Amino acid sequence: MKTVVLAYSGGLDTSVCVRWLADRGYRVVAFMADVGQGEPSQRVLSRAKIAGASQVIVKDLRKEFAQDYVLPALQAHAVYEGKYLLATALSRPLIAKHLVEAARAANADAVAHGCTGKGNDQVRFEVSVRALDPRLQVLAPLRVWEFRSREEEIAYCARHRIPIDVTRKSPYSIDRNLWGVSVEAGVLEDPWREPPLDSFQFVSSPERAPSRAEVVTVEFRGGVPIRLNGTRLALVPLIDALNRIGARHGVGRTELIESRVVGIKSREVYEAPAAQILWEAHGELERLVFDRELLHFKQSLGPKYAELVYNGLWFTPLRAALDACIGFTQQRVTGAVRLKLFKGSCQVIGRRSPHSLYRERLATYSAKDQFDHGAAEGFIKLFGLPYESANLSK
Image (cartoon, rainbow, N blue to C red; front, side, top):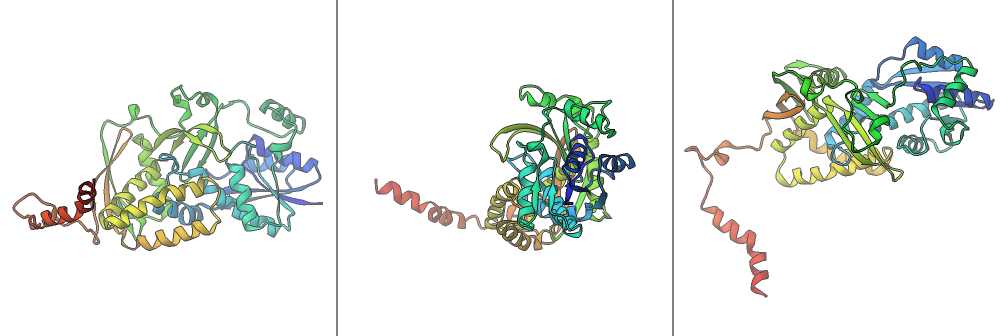
C-alpha cells in the first residue's frame, strides 16, 4: 500500500481529501502545522481518523515560522503589490518543508494538499516540495476529483459519516496564522462592494476603535524586535501582543485587487496589525541609521523579495542571496521607535538609535546651526553641471 502525507487543515476540503485518497488505496498520514492559527481541537483530530487517516501528526511551528520566515520578510520589507504583508504566503514553504520531512519519516511515496486549481497555494506547496525532494509525487485531489460544489462534498462526508461543521456556513475562505489573516470569496468577489463587517475576523473597525490613542514603543537589536513597551519578549509573544493591541485600535486592515500567480485577479481582505506596526517601526529605524545610498538600494529589494515569497520561490538561490545581503544591513538597525495607534492609523512619533545619522547641529534652523551654508553654492554648481552642459550644446 502506498503512503501519502496530506497537508491537513481539518476543514471540509482536506477532510474529503483524506477519505478520497483512502478510497484509492493510499495509507493517509494527516499532517497539521500550527503556525499560529490555534491548536487543533480534539474534534478536528478525530475527524481525520474517522475520515480514514492512519495517523495524525500535529507540529507546533510558531517559533520557526516567526524566526526563519516572518523575520527575514520583515527585515526585507517584503510587501506584495504595495499592500499585502504575505501572512499566508510565508507559511506555505515552512509547511511544505515539514510535509517533506514527515513524508521521509513515514517512508511515503507522495505528499498531497487541498488547494484548488486556480489558487496561489498549489504553486507554493508544489514548487517548494519539488525543490526539497523532487522524488516525491505531489497529489492535488481538488484538481482532479469528481466533486463540483461544496454541497457534493458535504454529501460525500454524510455517506462516509465524516462529522463536518456545516451548521453555520460562512461564505468566506479564511486562512489565519501568527502574521495575519487572509479572507476571500463570498460578497468580496464583487470588487465594487465595500467589505462587510463580518468579512473581518478580529481587527476592530476604525469607527468602533477607542477614542483615545495608544502609544507603543518597540525596541530592536540588529534588526530583531526584542522589547515592547520596555518588556523583553521573544518574537512569538511580541507578535501576539502587538496583534491584540493593534486589533483593538483598528490597525492592520487592508483590501486589494491582487495579481495571482496563475494570472487571474482576485479581491482579498487582510488583517495584520502586528505586521503593520513592526513594518512601520523597522522601516523608520532604517531611515535613521542608513546612509542615503544604502537606504535607497535596500528599499528597492523589498518588492522583489515579496514577489519571490508570493510566487512560491522561497527555496531558491536568489532568496538566499537576498537574505545574505539584507542580513548584513541589519547590523546597525538597533534602537527604539514610538508609534501612536488611533482609529486605524499607525503613526511613528519618535525614534532613536546609538547608530543614528541624524545630527541636530546640521539639521537645525536655530542658533545651534553649524552647517556650512557657503559650501552649498559650489555643490549646486557641480551637481547641476551635466544638465547645464547639455543645454549649452543645443
